[in-house]
Image: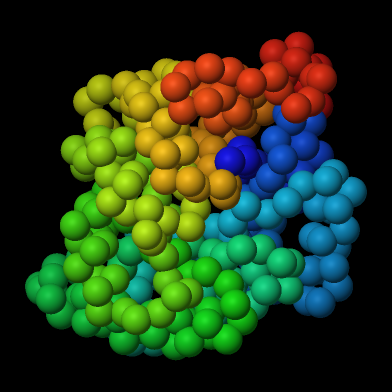
Length: 301
């Protein structure tokens, strides 16, 4: 397994500076925010994509995932993350989400990223039944599923507290409607904890669909607020051990977007907690870190 850091913690920085900072912290990978100010797909020209690629190569960073969940570029006053959603009452507004996702899939293919993740439907609008919302979500998502298959990239659904699909049982219900190898799960460890599903208990069950993990801590009250790993109540040793037992060897991306005031320090502390667990054996023994750098002693970028 490999650790990455999501660029959504660095929305006050350009992508070039973001990549430099994440690399300086010792991360192998970066989750690219398909949003302002890093890679808003609607405004990207071929030359912009080339520049993104060259920046990643300069800092020897791989893309763990493309985050197509957040859409701050639309500047929706209701909420800057999940509106417009897949289940907006107005079809033309849903089309903005669909077009964004299609563009993000092309971006993933252009950059050689394994895939993208998207929201699990969105907030249920007043007066809309859950069954009707699921049908709308399915109908809107299917053109993106077809493109993901054509491009050979993953389209991952991320359960989120308070949205249409927030629990793993709900994901399993929805995924049973879709027969596509391109569609999978972005397993957000903190989100599972928020809705009362202790993540280590679900890793094996969801392994068939899991293509990528998000990781952050959550308080004992299970309030949906991302914390630096080690500062909440999640048992990360148990979670990482469960992931290892499934044979997963992909990316685990640290997602700490609330820490925009000091993303470097948050990312450094997260890596210090998680790296010994990721590189150690499932029984808890630790292997030597591959790099000679001591992350706790690195100077600030």
